[in-house]
Image (cartoon, rainbow, N blue to C red; front, top):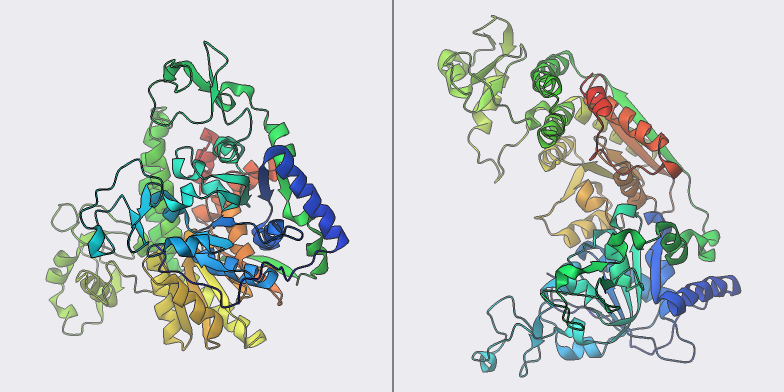
Length: 588
């Protein structure tokens, strides 16, 4: 949760720095017309087009002080909103979180908070003595005078008791149907900002926007309509049972085309975007051949996985075992990135029991680590080569040394650490070397879904003399981003798609390296958009790494097929695979 208030040093004057042109006024008039008709709408477009910059001018009111505006955004995106507000207005901005006082909230014109804060503060109060926020979810106090005061579950938090002029919900596609804390906010106008709009997930958005009649529940026995039933067992208006009430939208009375036409507006229609000459952008797909050892191990793993898939296919139980099939696909994806990512589970060839801390040799035979070390005690004394107990094929002793080290489980505070380089890490080093050779000031963001793989990349790059910083869930994201942006020697930012692909302003980098293809092509686009933003002044380059002869090539093939078969190229993900697509994925 955010720390105590951060305020802008500028004095709040209620005057805006930004004066819209005549063309921009037309766009603002159109958007404000949507507010008058529907009370808000959805600002939809690519992430890099700057939806936040385009939405903030709505707060301008001619010859009047700035209206009180609430901005709900993920934690790491708060600094970006603060920067955008500072460019447009001379206003007081408060980052609302734990430790905020009532005066901080009421004296500000822009309040920025996170989704988690809104939810946790849904039932919260201010201490009547120290005036600090006290959440009813935690039995704690902020001053001794409030020790014995019992909090009631029905109290309304400060965010929900305030009458907001306008609420902006950033990354609105994260909204869920049960987010009562979001729905309970009081606002004259509501706006949702998103670059990902799923037509199967429209109802929560309409519910937040309070669109009539699609956000209402109607009664089968009367003309009664209510917005929210909450935890009522009977309708608070007509007293009929809740089971006799149905939402308009889910009763197939919602017209998707009409809703999207009337409620959505693209930020690309904003005339301000015409003022920017965007630098060119390049997307490169790099395909590399795995090494002989990697290919051999991958084929062995794939043969084992194919046996499981074939059993499901022959029994015509693909749908019944869909979750297991997705798990098999994920294991093949892991093996395509780095073989050590795969959780091996097999029978030891020496003790005939389930392999404990298994070691997969280049010949594809699996053994317990202890069994192999007992078989080859010369490893500790410096023996260079060993031979497989099953097929006598030789292998280097560093495989056993690696197994011995990883079994200790305590190396620099991490577990299951990857230590060996692979084809993808070598290809990445080549790309980074080329990048720095072409532009010594260039920086890059490396995306992957596996934090262990990112840790390996960080160690390998550090050995070459490059300074890296990793952005993870457990790390201090703000300090990591500041170092990446401000330190000219820090060239590489390592992050996952989940963290780095959403909302962050990574325009300090001009290169993006995607280490593996994703389930959803929209995710790849969002990762690229973080680099190619309105603040970018260099040509951008995105490189996707693909391992030849692996499931990664088939994933791209399936995604392209799904994209070509749908209107406007919309492709949700691989979450709903057909039988033919499953067969394609396992046919590598």
